[in-house]
Image (cartoon, rainbow, N blue to C red):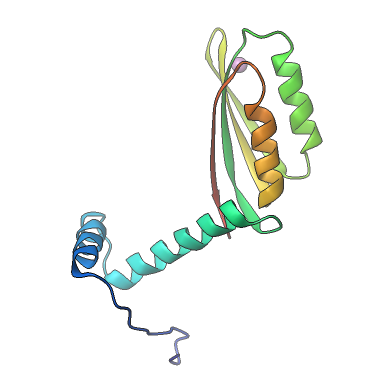
Length: 138
Ligand code: NI
């Protein structure tokens, strides 16, 4: 059923304990109502699906890359990989954490499959300590 405002109302059947937990979660997050919480939960669900199952799906976000400068040529390799994936990299911010530790925030925007490939190539390099990916499906 769709009303004039362009919203759809539907009923769902759920175990009471799940509803209780969901309600206490969105209330403690200061959501104004359940609809907004369900809306956001569905968005997250869809983004997660597109990210984990999608190849050509469009996603955007950031890759966090922590690495130590104790491996020869690591910086050069990281730069080569980023050039290879320049079509999906919007920008990169480099943070010098310590003398020999760096954090890069790589802003990405493109096909889910390509972003996963980029992250995997970075992860596989010796000296790369942690890679975290956070994307949304716009
Ligand atoms: Ni640095």
